[in-house]
Length: 296
Image (cartoon, rainbow, N blue to C red; front, side, top):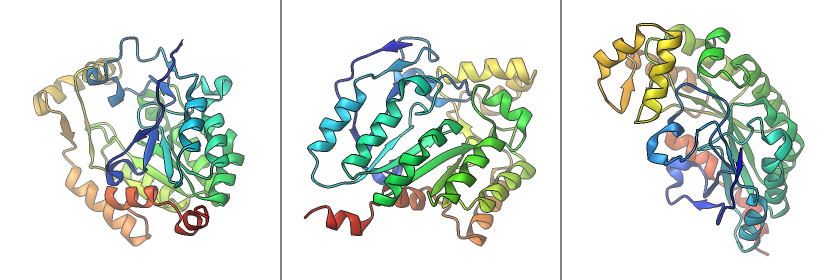
C-alpha cells in the first residue's frame, strides 16, 4: 500500500445523467476485492503499479474540506466509481468516514457505491447526512449463488450479506440503489439468477436498479485478467468467449433480450426506478427544501 499526495480530490461531473452526482471523489486507487471482471484494471487508467497495491490519498479529507468550504451551493458528492470506499484498508485508515464527517458538517449530500458490509460501520453518519440532506448507498449485486459469488468476487462479503446490508439501510430510512452489473455470459446470465436478485431487491425496498444491459465489457488489461480467471475456474469457457465475441468491447449475453424484459417488467410492477437515466437523475437531485434554506 502506497501513500500519494493528491493535488485535488473532487472531480466535477459535467453530465450528472451519467454519473449521478455533481462531484465525484476517489479516496483510493486500486482495489483489494479481487473481482475477476473489474473494468478499473484496464490499461487506459494507466496504473503504474499492481492493481491490488492500493494507493492511498491520505490528504483527501483536507482537500475535501477546502473544496466544500469554498462552495456556496450544496450538492451531491459521490464516491466509489473507480475503487470501493470500503476496502480492507478503510478499517484502519478511515478516510471514507472522515470525508463523510466533512460532507455532513458542510451540509452536502452523499452517494456511495460499494460491495462491502463495512459500510455499516458508518451507518450513524449516513443516517445523519440523510436526515440533514440526502444520502444514498448503492450496492453491486451480480449473483444469487453464494459459491459463485466467492469465485467472481473473492475478497468481499457475498450477496447474502450485501442484501442484509440493504435491508438494514432500508430499516433506517436510508435509500438504496442496486447495480445489477455485470452479468457474465454463460456464468450468471440465467433467468433463475436474475429473478432471484430482483426478488431480493423488491423485498428490501430498493429505490432503483442500475442495469446497462445483460453482459459485460472488456478492455485491454481487464480482459487478460478475466480470461485468466476463466481458465482457473471455468475451463474451456475462454475459448467460447473468443469464438463468440473476438476482441469486442461489449459482450452481451445471448439471453439479453429475455433477461432485460424480465428486469424492466419486474421493476415496473414494483415501482422501482429501472433506467440509468431515471436512477442517475434521482441520485444527483439535491433536496430542494434544504438547498433553499442553505442559501440564507
